[in-house]
Length: 330
Image 1 (cartoon, rainbow, N blue to C red):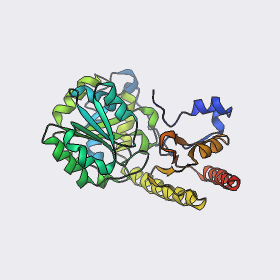
Image 2: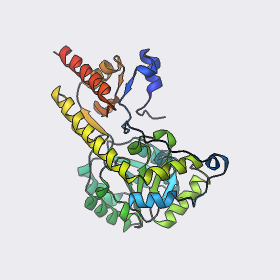
Image 3: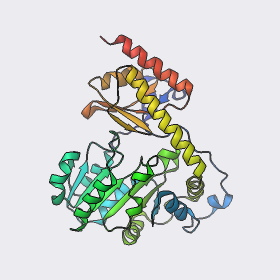
């Protein structure tokens, strides 16, 4: 299993700090979970139905012609490699590590490439995987650039897979409206923007034949009845969407300003996190963890991802810890 954010119980054991006493900023989730609506008893008692309105609500929310609900976009990441023969896959890196891992496990030759290298390698690839906005760097690529890459791949029967897990705040940059095109696959995560990662819901946006093949791999009743009810309510809450976008954007900017004040200006980020590349990453991660503040450490490039504090008490706690770190620096 690869390392991920949100490993709070591991931190509890390692540092001996009770779970309730942690400020977990490691996972890049909106810290304001959506209110849970009443779940009808039939949603618990019966097998899930696929004509209950969830797909329509998702199509309307994402602006996509067709969608396939899946039990978290992670499941699609793991299953997509089964739909092709072995070949060469490019993954725009650094990014969410499960992408490269899934293709490697299924026998593909995987090359991790930087943004400026894509054009050079693209014509030798069968699949290109892009996380947009990127996790953890926050790099956001223009739709026009991605569609150009898709066109070059599609001419040879190739795929462009775009993971839009953090796209909800910038829907105008999504490729959802183009997901009917052959060879374009868009992944969307439900849990991050709605702050409900525990429900395990995601969507795949693509043309009908590919969605049918993927549905066969996912299997029947993969998304539970209660999750389908919850997802439909959240996706239809347009007033709530605007509130969530505004407060996450404000909090993200506040986080930039706070980190910058202590000489830790982020190199990238998006509405749900900020990314700091620094030679002091491990030192800062350890300093914060000993004070019950969990960050996401990326040891391979000495960087940290900061999620958003939820309330004023969390902001104050983070500020005090950053000040203490700044005071002990030579």
